[in-house]
Image 1: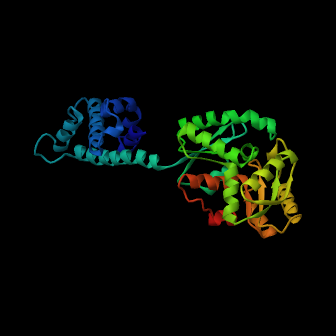
Image 2: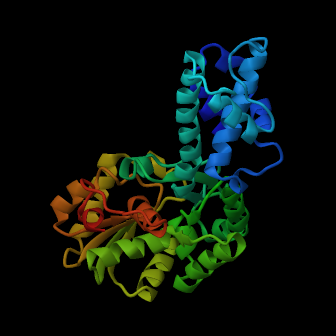
Image 3: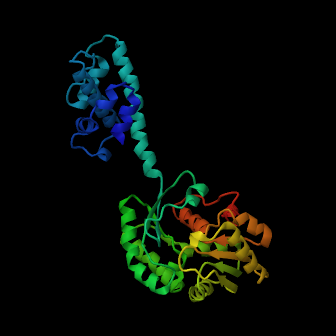
Length: 346
């Protein structure tokens, strides 16, 4: 990336397209690692190597004298080998190469500061959800890995759990700087202690900060100041019972919980259907502090504001508030305006 940036910004016209980035890299740095060189060394190496390549293309008549080694050569080039003022070609090269070198040095440093959240999803080949960039369009990058589980059943969770750590290691290999296990029922189904155990497994294996979608909904309910909650889910009664236990262990009273009785195909639930279901579920137990909608497969981002207006309480849901929790782990402000009261004050 450093070499490509330097060439792209130097503005050498058509020459840029056929200069070998590999050769430039070798000529510029030799066997020296990038991190071992000072910024001035890098300036010398990049500029001298570029001069060498251009000089060779011009049959030695470009007016550039890169010399060898690179550091001595750049001194030779800068001085022109004499007391004479720099000619136009030399001055132009100096200006463009200096700009390119500055950008080349800055680019990897900026990239290195940007956190990368690696997310583990239960389905196979699951993409980064659009909510991620909708809520957090800048300052953080998102990656996804899938577990290829077979539905929201206890047996399926048991079968998928051993694949969580390998998925986390893949994400680390792709550049993740933190990990979130983005499956609510996958992480709550054996209780609060098991959720924490899964997070610790990922942390120990990768050395990275870790969290989970279940921790995200707990985080959201705490931001909401909730104690007594009404819960609408995608799950069967069996899975709902494990969620109720998890929430109780996490310090909340579940006044009512109702599910759509789904095992798969949560994406088939329309926005109107989900809004009506969540509204009816809350209406049956209205004297609570918050409405929780649980299941990462349910698309709730556009329903948070309408449901809060309807129910008059904060609404917490799996994907938006798991993302809130995940970016906070990366040191990014999780606050997002226009998506409900919880994200607005996170």
